[in-house]
Picture 1 (cartoon, one colour):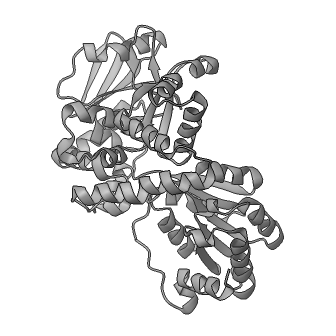
Picture 2: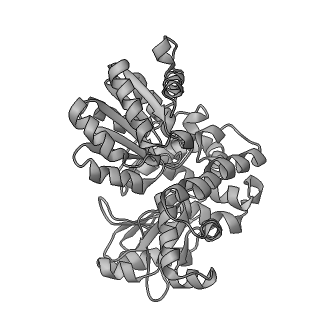
Picture 3: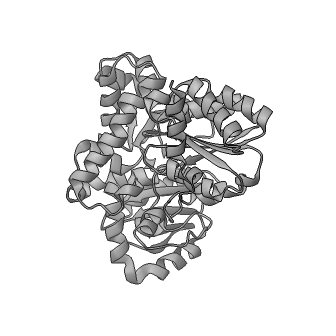
Length: 432
């Protein structure tokens, strides 16, 4: 590739090299605070996550805090996704510009990037901060850079961050998941503004995954932004660039299915029959969707890993806003019969629970202690609605459980069991 062109790109990406300021947003994602202590460590830093969630902005913000000379370069454009380009950029940054900190965006597109960075890391002693939108490729970096790379994941905006971008800063108070009195303190602190938080919660549900959409109220723009700049780029560009995709139609159909049935049980053999594909292909394609941060899979909770593997799992889209965009939904479509599965999607974790009698608990938190969480985003909750979580608590000899509600806050005692009923918006204000 033309070296003069690459040098021009380097200077375009780095206005500070010409004495111009690099303008970055003042708002910082909560992950920034987790990464910050590692800036002074020797290890390289990798940031993974879904497209458009702010990885590039985070790189720029970290770059502004670097104490020494820095260079930034992005490999998002196809024409520069070559190993020789990476080598040229590193040599020019280190030798011509005397940089000691190098920031590389969307590094996963470059073949053998981990081997190249390992060589420069070991021989030149420079600090690397890289980002990628494909977890498997960054995982390869972890293997190739064993002991040299620390990885962080940037998720879609959480509710507190969404509110922060709207100008409402909520202190991310950390509490123990079973500290019910602390939950009550948070709820009472904001009870006079609950109508505001209830409205913002719904807005967050259908558009709140991406920083650039927080202030956007036009449903058509929201849908097109997510579909064109996130979904299409991942399905038709990012995944095929890394994995062999013979049936792009199947990849899309599987993802659309994930959007329409988010929080539902799935079985590989049934999906294979539904989409007229073999089970191995379906398994692989779901893995690709997971690697690209588009879907999440939860296992049925059990003390035995072998039992968990045998049981049906749950499939979630990574954020309801993506499902709404793919299915053509906006705020007006989030009726009671539609919204429930997407609220559950927001709270999904690594485990749920379901027994042979089909009693089911939506989320099972295992650390630091076992806590069942049931999602009942509805106006009224009866004893029947709490039956499954109480059966789970009996079976595992637990004294506390949580019911996420639409607007009810209460602490109800069933025999020796405490059930905390807490509105979804209030639960999401805490960092538990």
